[in-house]
Length: 262
Image (cartoon, rainbow, N blue to C red; front, side, top):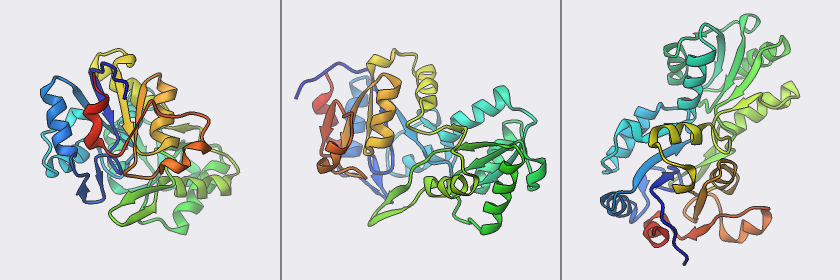
């Protein structure tokens, strides 16, 4: 397998580092071995039900020595956008309570009234109700912008998959007859730009590692980065022929990551 020198790994979580509540076998050893060699790690997640520090805490519970600033998720980019350009805007949130609190902490207002809404934000919402969909739909009919944290149709758990944020975004989009104006998670490149700010490295020295062709690998392509597909999550090797693009490397799991590092 051809090797190239990389200085940083941008790794997905669900399906890549862990599956549900179980760490991928060999993942901890790969993280520690490459860290000892001076490779920097960032973990990139579309998960908007938790903040980046919340996700870092969970990774530490798996036994990896990870700092809060080693995690970037879709809400990291969302909160940055609000803080820089949309302070005092009024947001109607279809998502978890932690997302609403983060939006308020970034300087915006969370509202319930669809007629006083500037932006509808859709994310994974385990308490989704018809009333939430109705209010989002009314807000969009009255001119609100439509934002989505991510459009993942599902996410992996230990024994299969659960519906993801994309299923909720799709319900709102179907009713409204329009797609989101902004998507903050992969394959959009906002997380890549924020990651490069943190790492202070050129994009050519970064390797994206993930399990989904339509998010992780397309994200790497959009961001001008190399990619490695792991077969522990959503994508099977037999499905690769369906895509007009491909990863630079295909690995059985993240445990084999050292094989492609220079």
